[in-house]
Amino acid sequence: MKEEFPPGIEVFAEPGRAVVGEAGILVCSVVAKAKRDGEDWLYLDAGVFTGLMESIGGIQYVFTTHKNGRRRKWVVAGPTCDSMDVISKDTELPDLEVGDRVYISSAGAYTTAYASRFNGFSIPKTYFF
Image 1 (cartoon, one colour):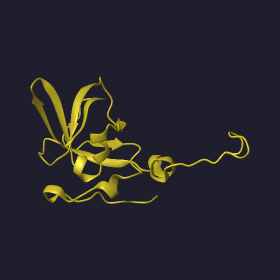
Image 2 (image 1 turned 120 degrees about the vertical axis):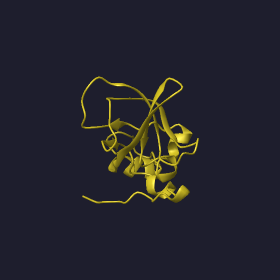
Image 3 (image 1 turned 45 degrees about the vertical axis):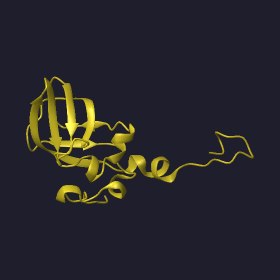
Image 4 (image 1 turned 180 degrees about the vertical axis):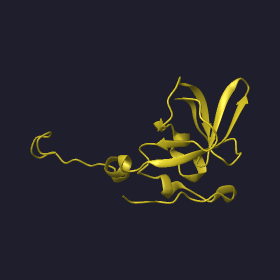
């Protein structure tokens, strides 16, 4: 910081996002697929209520998978069957099947802090490596 800012400047940073935001990856599994109103929907075992609440406020997570192939647009939703449990309306991923893993980057801040047991779903487990 001393190299980037002149002497006398105080830097304040929100610790969750600035310090640990990039420290976590949320590992999800595809639990269902559907075609609704001409759109392809992908349902994960984690959603807005189980750790990804910030997507409602506009945070756009990065989704990756080990699968390759032609990418297409998906609406990505959580498992709760609640209309608010939509993580992204425009995510490009290859064709995935039930059981495939999806990795959500930048999940180090606020995921488990915002998570609830809404509709009986568990809060994601945390592992340290």
